[in-house]
Length: 191
Image (cartoon, rainbow, N blue to C red; front, side, top):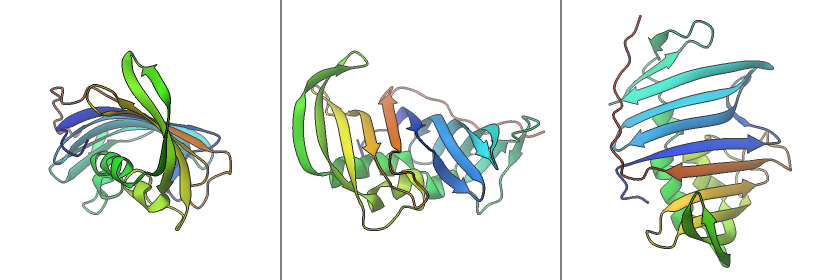
């Protein structure tokens, strides 16, 4: 997974979301990553209890986001870079290398791909590239679906507390696809 040049991902939550900033909780994220420094994503969540949605593009250290109200693109300040706290390429590689107590649950088909369905435990710190601030010293129950033919991670589910504000029964699912497929991510036109 660490050798991939590009992939698409979906992150969803059940029984909660991931806090990103004061009052902002992300519930769903869909995006593409092109290494080393390009990211395009759309997210939905709540800000102080109200529904919000925005798009984000990062290209070579420059980050742009749509205003959740007007939908217009604008630059984010230099110190706000999603790749600083949300780095799917690093996070996915961490999952594959840091999972412990692995056991095979069986062979299954996930999105049309024959996979090994495994379970294990993952240290919470391994998820900080995906979720930002994590509760320290936790082991997270994890299930993963890994391609039989290519050994790519196609889906992973994390059960239970990872961030300090999580509910006990939170469940996060990440689906990965379109490995090494051509993706163009360019800076948007800023109005």
